[in-house]
Length: 127
Image (cartoon, rainbow, N blue to C red; front, side, top):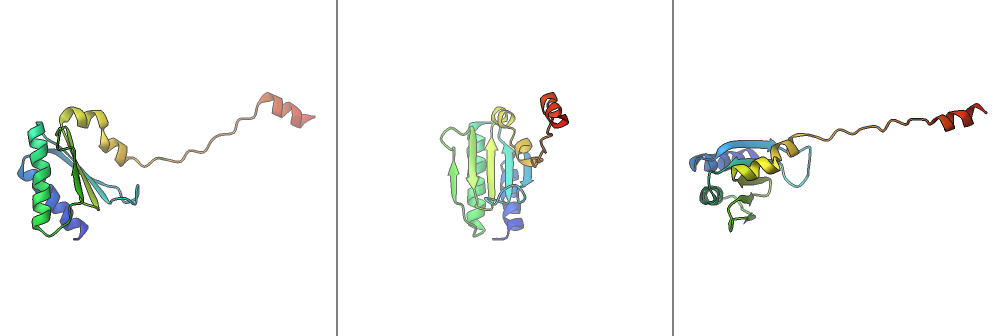
């Protein structure tokens, strides 16, 4: 299934069950493991489980593959793996604690180490 279609289905499934603060992050330049991360918030453990089940059902109904679901036991953080898209459905406190949006939105900048010569090295060069 095409990435754009899969993303649309997943977001719609989350919206159907009233997920809050849905964020879609493009990770193609950050990792080769997946192309998108979708992060959403549920108000309760029961809702996070229902959101994950909604995504599962809608993707399967459309002919897509669901690789797996993790975290349904507790419902605090449920992960739905669609291959090209990984969906994180969390309670508000868990989402605030792990702050995945900040983690995955920033591309680490390579820093050049500035070489500072010590006074001893300068004195040795002068001799």
